[in-house]
Length: 480
Ligand SMILES: *Cc1c(COP(=O)(O)O)cnc(C)c1O
Image (cartoon, helix red, strand yellow):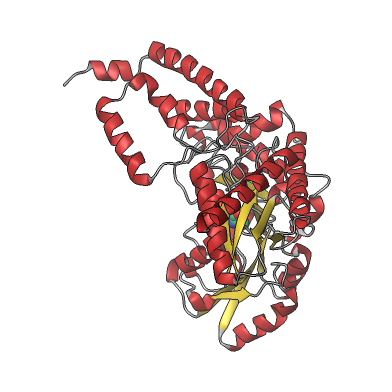
């Protein structure tokens, strides 16, 4: 055995040298990408080619170029032409807080394994609770992603609203949740994990504008109870992922109160609108929610993956995973907020709270107001541009930074148009100048844009449309 390997793996001087070099490289990457100095948002490669590259690199690559190769062979989320998935171009300072977390590696499950990040987590979740409009009994914690946070919230809901002790004794009787057909797929997944089955997912159809049709709530609730299903929670999307349209949280909240349902708001994407003076109205009624999810890595400029789960009655968070059914009554008076592992699905987690705190401390919450407002403004502007284009149409007028649109041609049927639009997106991907995504809504194939970079402007939108028209023109020429 060669003990020198350990010595070099832990060498502070090696760390210093590589660290300085990496910071320089990443700063160059940023200044190159942020304002679109380099042309492409992605250098597309086939999965097999990429796999072969990295197999070969492990054998013969130069480790001095390891980090720069990784950087090069990724999707440039900081590029203004990156308008695809809902991931933040992370604020560079959070790469530094991420480095602290990785190096100090305090596991957070108990207070002693992360004193500062535990206390800091309380500070930032208290700010979020206040911003939502919650009260002094409200508490939150951070966890690894919106998917896990939604599952955790629904587990809390079941513990709070269902009389039987499902946690210890399993299900007896059919439980259910009510949710829009447009909700993120992870809500379905959470329900399935919880053993609710297909029957327990009471799907509420959406309106033409892709918002939960709240006029159907009462009827669907009655139908479910007649079938012996006991609904215990209802979920509002703020907004739903595919279209970026917000459900009416106020109406859903009132319905939840009438029927003693837990009201959960999935604000993974747009919960951050609580910080936007201009767009706060989109989350009107959020203060009625029993629980709210907000992703830091989507609309709050933080690296993947960090999510806040906030609860109006903080005591329910302590009960979610507790063995004792009567936990709320016997131990609620001693609230050990500082032992995060009691409330999170994870045991060990990263020191994610320091990203949030760093942003609040260094830039203040105004930075989130600017970020959300700018991106939503740009989403709407792109919507206006599409509206004026005779050859394109919107799925719905955008209310956030998510825009679904497609090329249309009256001489082609839906199937042909679907194929054509899918083709446009594939060519954009392979070309790499722009990165956008796609979605199917009610059988229609749409191109989908999420404006995530605050420096993406009208200029870039027009360039994208120009490129799409170029693709269409080429396909016409090759058909002739
Ligand atoms: C992104 C998203 C999720 C999933 O969150 P992750 O952090 O990716 O796990 C859930 N719900 C909505 C509405 C989302 O936009």
